[in-house]
Length: 512
Picture (cartoon, rainbow, N blue to C red):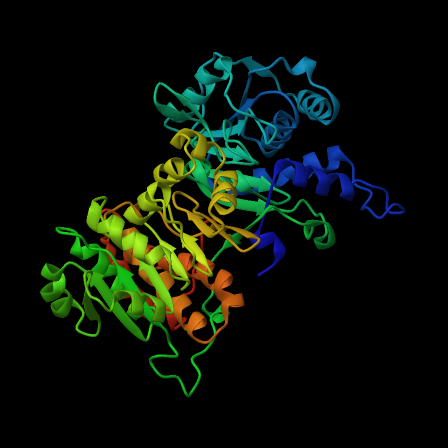
């Protein structure tokens, strides 16, 4: 897997790569110029357009201002020369364009092209979005609202140039108008030079459609420049093999703490996921009325009452502790969190455990702490709003790491994982995961992969294993959605697909 496949860049980093490539050969560059890169961008976008819609008789190109508009005028010129019917709706006065964009517009005019006023009806069923590019920053200006809405309401298909208009390249955020996100909903996005963070996380992941990445002929030495994040895919080869002399204690003792009255299923699902992911021993600390269900569902697991005198010893002896699934926000959960917080075993806090992490006077003494909030829980942990969390998901995850001295997963579209010093955005997962119990299964998967490392003293490997646990969880959900329907997936379906993925039986081709 090449750097281009995995590296996620900010808009500034992409501009720096382009600037370096445009240096003279003597200065270490490739001697390219901006107009050459613009023509290559338009050419590759037009090729994708023809591949995707080979029978289209015409195309409507929406052009704003700046280089994104220039890319649009290149596509329009090529479509004219190819013999297609071309309509260009100019949202900004093209005679006011400057630099490379002005050259692209002039070449379009010299090829016989002309523009229409932006309020003219969209004529064709293939639309090219060249309205706003990677320099866009929230909020979306009011005078662009109507055009974005027209593209979205059109019966035609939309190809976005570099990024769907209205999506921030660095964050994936989009403007909320009347309670709804407003950005161009593309069917295809042709992204140039390198992958933009905003196409893979937050709102942007829902607007990008099918992604195509083209490097514009920039050499790998420039594309290998440091990036802000890495695209996280399931890679079973990254997990250590089981030694021939393994036994259950070396594969890790996991303690699952949770399941107050009426919520036993959460702890049981976490326990089953932990065992399926590789844990050697799993004990569930829960309410006594859940013991029969635990024995029926998972006879391999052990039960311990929360008021057992042996609880403190069990926590200290555990190689990995999960606290939170079904823990509740009553005194029972508070007492369990307080007892657990004093111990040093590696610990994952999720669900109601996050409530106590925020509100308890006892803070974890764990050698390694992992938290897995969704945006609402992250907002509570950071005493801010969900909207501000979603406005910059990577920064929010970094704030969680700094505040709680932990490894963190911020769940949601394009889940953000910060494991050690590495920032990842998960390439798997989708709306099929928006159902009860998914977080409990994730907690168990994390325990199953991390407990063996803790048991054998390989704590330096836990950051990478945490990231792979997130990938395993969402990749398993993808398999479940493929076999049935995204609407019908439930959390225990995810557990059923773990063995196939751990065995390396599935190869994923993600749309990114």
